[in-house]
Image 1 (cartoon, helix red, strand yellow):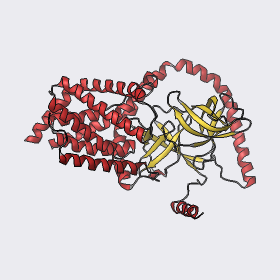
Image 2 (tube, chains in turn red, orange; image 1 turned 30 degrees about the vertical axis):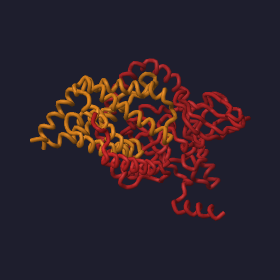
Image 3 (tube, each protein chain N blue to C red; image 1 turned 135 degrees about the vertical axis):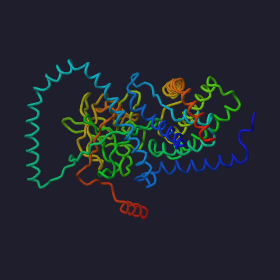
Image 4 (tube, each protein chain N blue to C red; image 1 turned 90 degrees about the horizontal axis):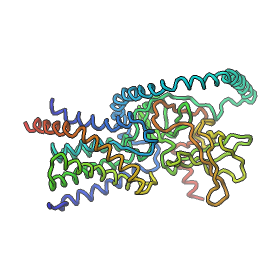
Length: 297
Length: 171
């Protein structure tokens, strides 16, 4: 058996371990956005990726369409039943919207937390190693996308923008395991119940919403949306429905298991929600100042 | 001009991983299994055995770096461990025979080694919380099966491609 590591190789190995640890530490740091070399590489790779993935998406879409065709009859029946209700709902929504606008004018309050401007985007890549649920979309800083914006599909919230480059952005899905990934949410009922979405259970496929008061009356099937109170996401994006309530380990609060409204699998078209109202994300200098002030206390 | 075929082949393999993830429905088998394509890694190992080990290490370094930046966001992981796996596998190939049957075991061992390293790394940086038993049943088994199928389908074309490329480079 030949000698596995000679002296020179050992030094190379140790040197690269040091570089590895430094690089991993650098990339896991709580940083605002990518450094410019990373952004540059991302744009170049993203260009090739878009060329490859667009025909592939079309190809994959073909099979889905064939599958859809088989269910057409049943779907049609169900949709016909729903369409009758929709007309009434539509006129209600239009009336309420007008009401709302007029009342806002009276109050002199033009912007609301719920306002957002959607940016259409196509998913061009998904992390093939699947350790961390991130997708890459084909819109970036050039169309005004910034880190921490909410990303939705027609069904509901799926995640937030993690980092951006000029022409691509990386979206971290709600199903990604990250202790810093929190969404301020509200359970809609007679009295709104506020809580924080703090994680995802991969086996049960449910989101976990914690810090719900122990005496709140939450029932199965109630709708959960974003509250807009986190300062980043717009208000009213649908997250999912309550599946089950469980008391937390100390019995002081409750935890809700939420069935997500949007599927995190096989995403193709998504929207990035640009919030119209100012976000609380402080400028870099302001943040530093706050830190200094805290240090003095 | 013909020298360009090598980078082109590697770029095609690099994107093929993601192509597979895009086309293959994630909800297949009730979403119970995580099937990870490692086509680029297998191509790289073929390159190490049938073309040149040091070039393969350089390619592993470069494409691992691209992979880290574009897909995972954890810099250094693939950049460092792809060349490492290439090195270990090429040492094993020298000890054992290199006919395609035995190579399939060695290459699958390489893929398993890479998966295991990435598992440990992701546990370390708290990006996952599955345990070893879950990892083996949910990820490792199906992944090895998929890559074995890839090996069976593409081992002959890849081998002949790299042997041809070697002749082009030697001229």
